[in-house]
Structure formats: structure tokens, C-alpha cells
Length: 243
Image 1 (cartoon, rainbow, N blue to C red):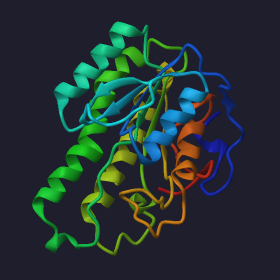
Image 2: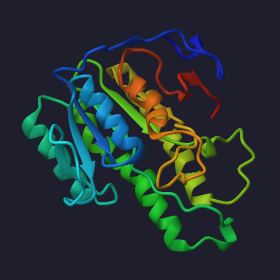
Image 3: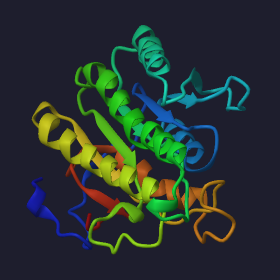
């Protein structure tokens, strides 16, 4: 399937999906709550061995997960997590870059510098480093998939007004990472995509958000099941959307 097979805003040709992930390993960051917890649960139900990345050993996780202490802003944590997976598995089949932070409201001239630094560290630098260390074991598997959980607020086709500059720009960068991964590694079998989960009722999204975490996790989970399908795209509700 080529990049011309689907236009933004229309359903893509149905990809070839895994119905069973038994024997596959998946790393999900921010897996203890919200969208990440739902994605991890979905992948585990499909049979994957789920490595649940969490920032603290105190966070509760289902017993069937493999816990990895993983603050994505810390390169040492990322290296340790991938080393741990390398000791246990022959490779890594799925990486879901879900962990993220949001500082909302203020325009750039009023934004606090530490909010900018925090957003870059977690939303962009962290996923880049995770990909850096995850790619070698991933490219040893048959159909490696990377799913980056992004946001509609990142799309350059939008006005990009209304504040929240650090969140918007770092998620735009995450989409750029997706395009780069596709361009660089698709010929080696990697399927990399971004997903907009919508406005989800989580700690970050707030109580007014109309979507449940399960609804937000549906498209990222679907992308993680690709056996064969398009890469380098931005998706919402299983449809390609404009960047």
C-alpha cells in the first residue's frame, strides 16, 4: 500500500491486521492511567507481552504486565527499559509513545520557560530517544510498528491560535518524527503512524472532555495491530486526517 492509497479525511483501504499478538512484545509508555492504560490493556487482551512503562514503582499495574520504570525524560531509564526487554525477548514488535504532558492556555509570550522545557523533554525528546534505542530490536522483528499518540492541536492546517504553544509545537514535532521514521525505515519493514485520540476525559484532558479513555485508545490500538498497511500518516477514528 502506498501513500497515495488514501486521502486525508477518507477511510484508507483496510489494512491487514493481526487478530492475535501472542508471541509479540509491546512497550507502552505512560501505561498506568488514561489512554495508555487502555492501550496496554487492549494489547494484553490480544495476547501481547506488555511492557508497561511507568514513572514510579508505586503506580498500580495489572499483574500480567511486565513493569518497567520509565521516565521518558531520562535517557538512562530508556536505556535500562530497552536493555530489560532485550534480556527477555528476541525483539520488540510494538512501541507506543503515549506518555505526554500538557501545559494549556497561555500564549508564548506569557508561557513559563520550565513548561516549554518540560514539554520538549517529555513530548518530543523522549519519543525520539525511545525510537533511537528501540529501533535495533524492532528491526529484528517481522512487522515492527511504532504508534505516536499525538493531538489534533498539532495539525499545521489548523489556525494554531488559542495558546498552549509548548504542547502544540511538541506534538507537531512528534508528527514530524513519524514522517521521518516512515521515510527512513519503511523499506526495512517499519510501520510508523501518529494518532489523534480526540479530546479525552483524562487527568490531562479534563472533566469536560467528551471521549472516554477507551474511545481515545481505539485508533492507537488498531494501528498497533497493523501487519501490513500505510505508514507515515496521521489518523483519527481509523481515518487519515490532515497534518
